[in-house]
Amino acid sequence: QFVESGGDLVQAGGSLRLSCKASRMITSTFNSAIMGWYRQAPGKQRELVATITHGRDTGYAESVKGRFTISRDSAKKMVYLQMNDLKPEDTAIYYCNRYNLELPWGQGTQVTVSS
Image 1 (cartoon, helix red, strand yellow):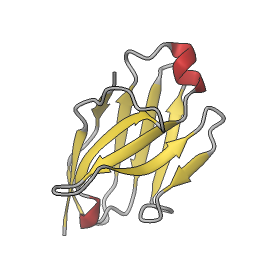
Image 2: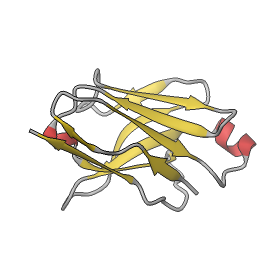
Image 3: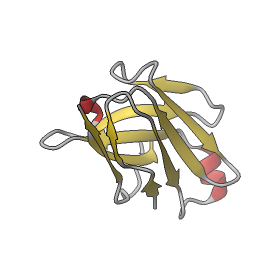
Image 4: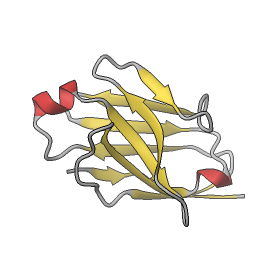
């Protein structure tokens, strides 16, 4: 359902922009969905990082507030996550999905932040 990209190895303080293509979601379903970015660090449960409504209202986990920005392009069925001032604790596999009614997960994209 989702194809994530943009992950990389960066130094602390660096930036990355993640992209997610909702390749199999019907456009009308995508446009009405609240979309989210999630992450899973080694040995930890997957956690919600950010959400965006069809009206572009956004929400963020406290740990990323002020550093990450979620956005979407409805015409392209894309969701983005701009990550600034990255910290080693941001190291994880990042996934996107529909919030609160998840569809099959994609492969995710690996973000590694070195100190």
